[in-house]
Image (cartoon, rainbow, N blue to C red; front, side, top):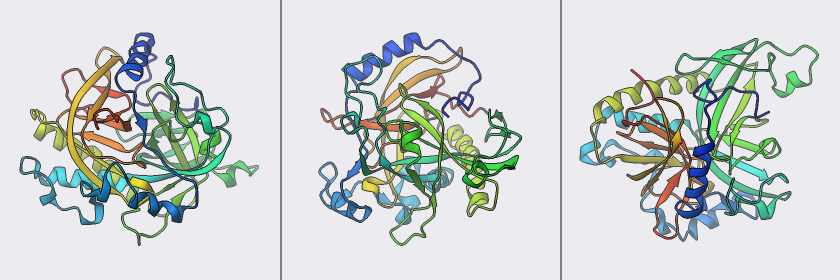
Length: 359
């Protein structure tokens, strides 16, 4: 179903041929690191073993458990109420993604390279792995038409609700809600994997209430840029729907304020909220170090990948990456064993560094 949604941020169809060449070069010679899915050969209860045995960040002292996050955890330069609230909103929208199957369709290499694609050697098998993601949109649709967080019309090819009850009904509803989650494609590759994927919301601490989105639909996938959109659909009541919708709106408003305040910053403070080793969400801080221009998206926007020293662990793949001052949101892609840096997938950036959220 990956063709059933318009391109994420534009209705244009730019020529990406040059960008594909540049991206292939980067994945072969520069950003050829390791994915950060957490693989668990046993049950979910066994994930704690990976947390305790972590080789990348033993003890996880560079991570802040979200429930313990305070404004004083921010460095003095960035100790700002709006930024603090923005980090919390991003955290509240961050989800733990659990996948139980590896598609038999997984490709052998990253596009146009000879670099191995994650889990190709495991294709067609079943085992537990976890990643991270973020609620991107909460949209109400009527006859296939809705409006996103920026007020832009979103048109679906399907005109009826596609939740499980409606798929099995002779009279599916024409009004429904979608909770759209953004993660990395190497976490959720295609429809086959999406069918065995779940998203846990508000997993803030070990005793958090269990609230999980299942029966997900793959909306859009971009293997080269390594991001995808998956959706939970409901035409009935849904716990937390209004809270999620409010958080999405707050994220847009706070991001505008933060970008205004720090648009001249040259330190590029970068934070990530993720679920290391499949456990409760953690916040980590660092700085964006370099950007790699893949190509142009259109006359106004460039396509870029980033490197940063913000700590991550297995289980962080697909997590939201926010670079304050650069004004851009990326998806965490992997880690470079050669120098310990981490890197993102591809996202949109204005050449002058101004935020994509115009104001």
